[in-house]
Amino acid sequence: MYHDFVVESSTFNELRLAAPGVIELEDALDFMTSHNVAGGNIMLQNNPIEPGYDIHNTIASVVVSRLTAAGLSDRMLVTAFDLPTVSAAKAACVTVGSSCEATFGWLVMKGAPARYMAPGDYVKLLVKNDIDVLVPEAGVVVQVS
Image: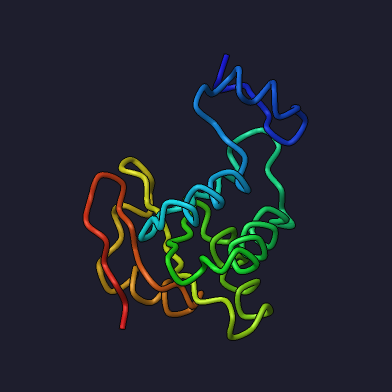
C-alpha cells in the first residue's frame, strides 16, 4: 500500500511501481533545461508522521545542490509540509552561496493544526525560519516581504 511505502529503504524501481510517473531528479532537471521550462516546484517529502523521516534532512541539501549545479535554482520553488525540512533546504542554499537563488515555501495542510493559526503567527514563523513564502494546501501562495 502506498501509505506504508518507505522511500528511504526502497530501490528506484520499487518507487516507480508504488508511484507511477515518478522520475529521477536529474531527468527532471535535464528536461527543464532542454525544454527551457520557466520554473517548477520541488516538494520535499520528509514528514515526521511518516515512516523513514530523516531528522537530518539529507534530502534538502541534496536537492538544493543538484538544482544549483544544474543552474536552475533561480527558477524553482522548493517546498515541504515539514517546516524543519524546508528550513534545512533554505540553510543549504545559503551554504551553497550566491549561485543558489531558489525560493523556499512552507506547505500547510488543510487539516493541520497550523492551519488554524492567526495570520500574524504564520508571518512570525516564516520570518523566524527565513522562509520566503507560505503555500496553503489548495490555496494561494503568500509571499513575506
